[in-house]
Length: 372
Picture (cartoon, rainbow, N blue to C red):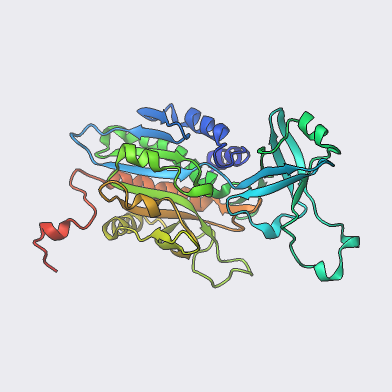
């Protein structure tokens, strides 16, 4: 658990807004290189760590988690040195006023604050409201020229300030748990696969992908290159055990990872994931055999890359796992280490279960003569 906690702490402390994942990419490459048979990075920044089977013409499985985090971009620098910003990804606007942020300037990281009206001068009709139209960041500069001297300009990226915190009950909190906790799964799974790679009967490709928070499709160049038979994604899902979320779903922190039954995003994107039945059932069976607790996720308003991967190439069988997470898309995203550890275990045992005879998809209907 200590190794897992340390890796998550290190990963969540790195700044890596969509398209600016460079430091996370470097971390993943360095951590994966001792274990994989091959490490590749494509022009967008997707990192692929491959474990090749020794069997003839093996099937291919892709297991992925995204590296990027939500953040902001400077839209305008005011004459008096304040920064006007736009959100990158689904930033939770309700928590923004008064937050600490890191401005990634050309000369290094500049600490900043998201400004808010002083309490004493807040008008009565504005109390309890979250002003977003006039959102600005204060870095202490008094002029536009001073901002430029600090290495900050229009187009500079901004992240939540990192503040890793340990809570009781194996809970840990920081920015970017979405989805660096899942990236930690990939790293520890790579160590496990290294020990049994001579026994693998499928090619296994671990992919740390980019730009999920911005457009969800950053992984697609890897999909086209690998053309996998199976794609399994790891992301987070809201934990519904806090007083404000209680009862929305049965997924709660500390009760194990969640396997996706359905996710769907109808606000503009109109896409989601319905996992392959055979793939889903085999994962569940493996979890039961290993006494690994699983929760079942049906999540409206959530979308993952598999929504687009499913229909790529010849049709790719997909499944998804989620790490129950409190306070998603805020600086205090909170996960339970035991959930993450259980996820690593179920994935490891599932990958071991794949043989040359394992097949997913609906082609079996034809093979059985169309019998019902």
